[in-house]
Length: 495
Image (cartoon, rainbow, N blue to C red; front, side, top):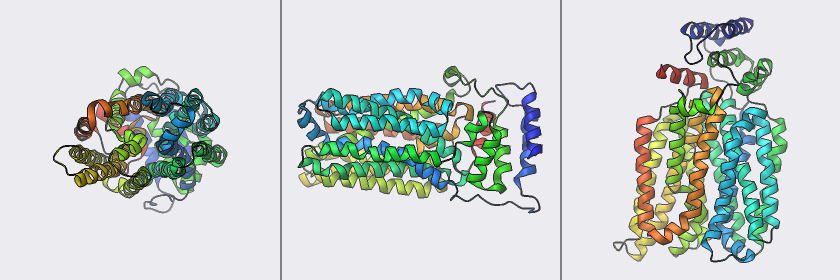
């Protein structure tokens, strides 16, 4: 390890172009990495590190995704009783605000997520995201007015805005490369469990006017567990190394990978540090520099994800099912089950088929399912056909989304962003996500009234087709590659 440290010290002491890595620099670090990749005396590759070491840390981090899913769906079954209890029943704008105010808060949280995550570290960022969700849920559960509900939802949204960014970063940075896709998809499963839990929790709200308050109180428990158990988790080794705490990064790698892999992991980490100033990440670099392409890909993927109409399904599926004459409680449970099933498929296939294949298949399946839903409301469909196509199309839509368009964008972006800019780039791209999410949540019911189901589904389907074309032309495959290999590859392609 001393030889690697000496190599790193020498490289840091040289004058290196901050825009393009020196070939001598990369060559020297390649030699250092090769020298330490194999344990002494083995003479052969030591295989992959155990996934069991990093799993507990990923599971705790996934509580953020569970909370995200729960708050995403908590107003689905309860919105009607909330509106009656708080006196705004029948006001579609007020109902939309109950949904979208949370998303507005998430936008604010996402804007500051990069500063928070890089400033205090990944572990403290998790805890800071849990705090407004605890306070906000308490305010929503105890309020007697629409204004109080909106305030509570806004506070919850701030926590939700910080959460996805830090989760994507943390899971990416603590996972071995060969299971990074699987772990990244597991956060989507946590989101599905949270969403399904909110749907189950909301079932009694139809018969018990005050039950919706219990639904908000429930969410405080996993938020508190997240804040407490994150104290037992490791910090991101990338963040520690960037802060000049190399010895602590080594200790974390030993916990996550095992002693035999520490030297190789540190060598790769040093290889990705190309002599840039770790504290010089600026927004201008993302908007005008070499990293613009990464931000463009990430922002466009998140925009297309939301313009597909997926969150309109999660927010207002009860309303849609009611129009089709289907009991909303049982139908929404089916939505949650399909979401969970699709996410499970993604976990199995993410590190086998790869990110790009899943994205293309996912958006294509969503386009087809939206076509089926549009057909359901034309004169060509019989009453039974309307029921089958509308409900079946919606379930197929959710299933398709969960296999790729749901879990891949945040995972892919956290993989392709340079380590120095990763948190800031995620914050920018997720801000785009929340802005579009906000307007979809706010305007969906009004658009459904004004445009009708056929035209609205056709618009969402168009964006899904655009997504297929965009992914095919712009997205690179990252499965099985270390973060440092991806970064060096992208740097080489821009020279």
